[in-house]
Length: 216
Image (tube, rainbow, N blue to C red; front, top):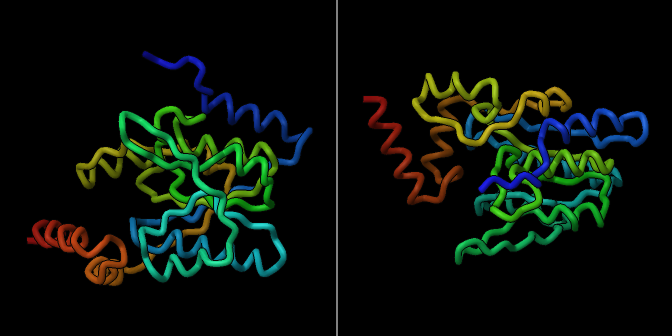
């Protein structure tokens, strides 16, 4: 059954644009990666710590470090908004607590993985819609996104890789953002994969076997 009460993302965006003259919108910055593992979250956290050192009120709304020690270390000292726990069909899921971030009203909120699909029962189906609400409330947001999740690039990615992108972000969201491109050489990316700095070691070995098979 379709939930007609869910906000339309286009209408949310239009509402933000209409309110520009009556309320100062938050500023959006996207750390755009050319592939998974290039260091988007790391770069976002480094930038956030610099802002904090300048006296900016920064909080973590949602950051996924994937248990990488160097990335985990950058979260130390940044106030964390506890995640909202959602039970769905016997599975416990955690999402950003939008209401808690709004109530805290920081100057800058960190919201990782912009293309993420929220757990059923969340206020918005997509995380980028959560971000639009924070911006509407005047909160600046730093977020991360891989290029394959940009709506206008999804078909090209599918043609090249054969993989369908089920999670995408409308180009209109990127149009309102400052974008910092994060990329490294293919050799460095493969080295990071082999060292387990992108996935946990077991999964890294599995991914490496796939890359090796494709190369032969």
